[in-house]
Amino acid sequence: MAPLAPRFRWLLPGTADLTPELRSAGAARGLSQRVLEVLAARGHRDGAALAALFDPPETCLHDPWMLPDAATFLARVRLARTRADRVLVSGDFDADGLTGLAIMVRSLRMLGIDAEPYVPDRLTEGHGLSLAAVERAAREERRLIITVDCGISSVAEVAAAVDSGIDVLITDHHRIPSTLPAAVAIVDPHLPGSRYPHPDLAGSGVAFKLAQLILSDLPDGATAALDLADLAAIGTLADLVPVTGENRAIIRLGLERIRRDPRPGIAALLRHAGLAPERVDPDTIAFALAPRLNAVGRVGDATAAAQLLISDDADEAERSAAELQAANLVRRQLTAAALVEARDQLAGVPDERVIVIVGDWPVGVIGLIAGRLAEESGRPTVVFSRITDPWRGSARSAGGFDLAAAFAACGDLFERHGGHPAAAGCSLPSARFAEFRDRLLLLAAGVTVPDPRPPLRLDLVTGADAVDYVLFRELAALDRSGDLPPLVGISGLRVGRVRRVSGGHVQITLRKGMEVLDGICFGRADDMASSLAEGASIDVVARLASRAFGGFESLQLEVRDVAPAGALRLMEHAA
Image 1: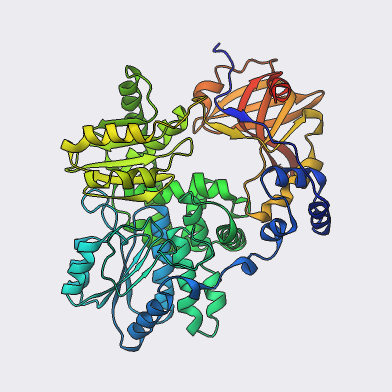
Image 2: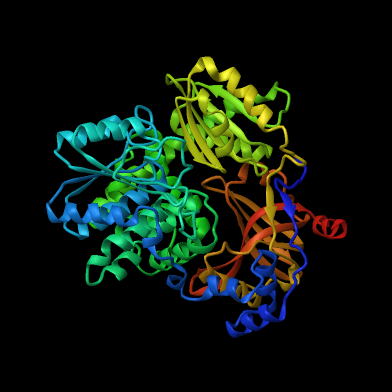
């Protein structure tokens, strides 16, 4: 049997400093001291922070008129409505771009505007507004193009649109390049001089704010705009922007919408994932919904994902969801095969501050490879596919390394590039690869990798005897906050039965004294099933859940990681 060792680096919560203000604000909301300790450890330490978490989320939304070029954007949309201009909405093929695209198309159609979605092909067009999109708009006599989650770097493409007599409105959230396209309006909260109070919106978040602006002309426009928060929440969580301020409000609004009444496309995706709408949380979106939306663009045409989010027809949504589910299975197979090759390539290479590798991998999976290697190694990772000319690269960060800044410093080497601190992409001529790699290694010289295992931050540490429905109900108060469910470090458990189940998961029966707890560990069959011995004493990191079966409810642990008994005690002493 393989030795039992944690896959993650466990980070214990710091000492909670519960100020009188926090205690008073928590008591007014019925929050227990344990929940307040979790919130304080997460950085929510005053009444204003609790208000953002638990007060009505719509009160935390900012005025969309404060966005750069908001007035110009709205004026051109109103003109399109007045003179019946046909509009092409060009998005991106990832979950953020697709959800933002759906928000924009739905909003324009509510105004009676003829708006059609356009999703570029990942392999032949890449990110951003493409010449193919401009050509389609010209062919269909569309007088306006609106970009979503892209376009800030599309100087040549916007110029081609202008030459064809087409106006362009750009909505984006990526880093601002040195040269801006000649669009009628550019709405990006990062623009110099922007007075928007929350610049960290995702692309779908910017689209959501503009929906509030667009739909303000309708009698029930404010309600109609808030109803699109489910799409914005998916894009926001998928794009890994900070879950603070207005982003948190959008996520809370979106979770409420999904749990209450998911639109047909989201409901169909949840059915295929085997998930109940009322149990949707940020992890559900990040690990179940977003990957399915992303998958079809990685292995084929992402238009099916756009139609899934735009259509209100249940049968059409089911057909699209089935297509996305099939694409997700193909994506998993391609990624697994590519990861084997990537790890083999790294096996004989000395460790460096940043990983840069090249392979004959599908462009659609290189971002996933980069993400997995960054997680496993704790190092920023850039993965290139050489099946295209120029090579296509995708990067994921680790250790706080700012990829957007690093790629900007290498901008003269790329044909095009973009992104944000946590993730970036580029097109690189093969002849410039060695120079790029050397320059990136210099930029990453300050990255420290004290432990290659990815971090797992615990919210609470307790003995098994305190794991009960009282604790579960206390922690469930966070469900309405938009925060992730708490991770609890639990000591004093003994392994009963260990069983592999379909999907690469492991079911574990855990004993605490004479009582039994059910445990499930997702995606860990390969290592955990062979290292957990019946009767072994262990510590675990888990989330508490409630499972209903045969009319009875029982407590379940969603186990994230396992260590030999005593690991938590040693960590507490070391701290």
